[in-house]
Length: 167
Image (cartoon, rainbow, N blue to C red; front, side, top):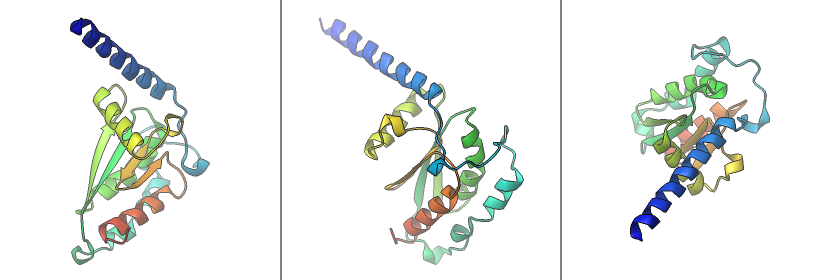
């Protein structure tokens, strides 16, 4: 009897995980604040627009070690083939270069463990499945889903507040 119940629980868990994977693969990716950024690049090379955006990470770069009260971990969830993720990646790479920010990256496509972790972050931040999507960024109590105009400066301002103890 116990084996039958345990087997049933495994099957139910498997069906739920597969269902979520299928859901994510067809999920329409949302843009941050529904802003259109124009044509997305099809590769991870920097575009002129992204190169100019990298210079906007000045608030973080201007901090000295004396300004930093604590390190911050950023959790970035992305999916292979996602054009918004490719557009957002240079910014994530740039903040990852800061000595006081650690970026943990979670590729969701085909990775059950990362999907479960993503679900836990969504649950903790009370984000419904209908509002979930990639890219998703979490840091402390802050989170951002999607990518678009103003996102990078919003994330940067939040991170500066976190590392300087102002949040």
